[in-house]
Image (cartoon, rainbow, N blue to C red; front, side):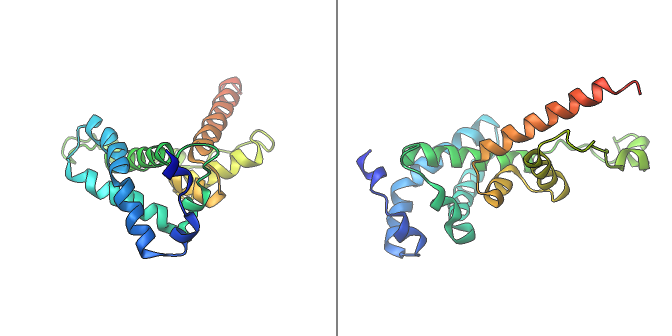
Length: 182
């Protein structure tokens, strides 16, 4: 679309209300479709779609419009980029919100027992992970950030965080499998 290439990101991040209103009016349907595909597939309430659409636009404005500043028309059309952002926000929300729950009366007694060994941190040998992998794991697990927050914090794409996370876990699994007998 020609309009995607002429998006005035500078006016959006400068806080121009008319530009923002036009942006929301033009792309709310795209964001709604991206979020809706995830929410409907997960069989959740339709009211969640509206909340998540709002979350997408809030995320676009967050931290002085950092995410909007990262949009690169040379890499993807605005519609494609907004669809990816929308789906990522919805997936992250679904993962955070819908953790399987068990009624307290149905939980086994062992679930309430504290075991220091389970809560102890794993000692990772120096040099096993790259500095980037170690940082991503630290942000995800020590600071309890979600992948989108880590991506924003580091100024990279969310998929980069997911890929780095996967590679780090693969290295750790391989290391601990090989050293399980020691």
